Image (cartoon, rainbow, N blue to C red; front, side):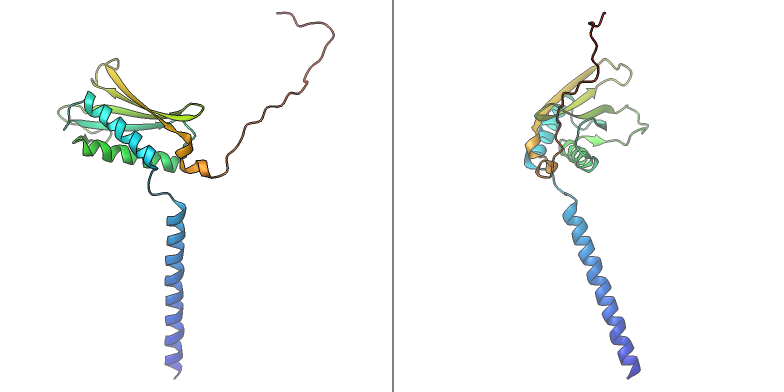
Length: 173
């Protein structure tokens, strides 16, 4: 009788632990966005199309991403992985950074920037590894209203006029 009660309490604990684990995994998955908004995916595919028009397919490329915008790191990583998959769909081979091959890969730099109302994403294509001036570029703009963080609370900038210094005679240059 005693072993039966011990079994039931152990089973209850195991079931409870499993349910807590599943609930926490669902909560974490609900908090992290797994997909980009449609307009962002369209912008990434436009950039990949621009790269494909400038560089021949089946070329090795190295993609570096630089985020100088207000896009959070998780979204920037999603954009980078979407860009990588879009490049692979155009038959580009993604070489790891610093890889040594017979023919040096074409370097791509994806810069995530922003203007007042839009995000501006620029991809620079360095055609020749030896000549840093042989570049071409592609650029798209994406509305900020479509960003995942646009639906959350935003921080606003306010300006205030305050007297700091006063004197009877004017300032001289």
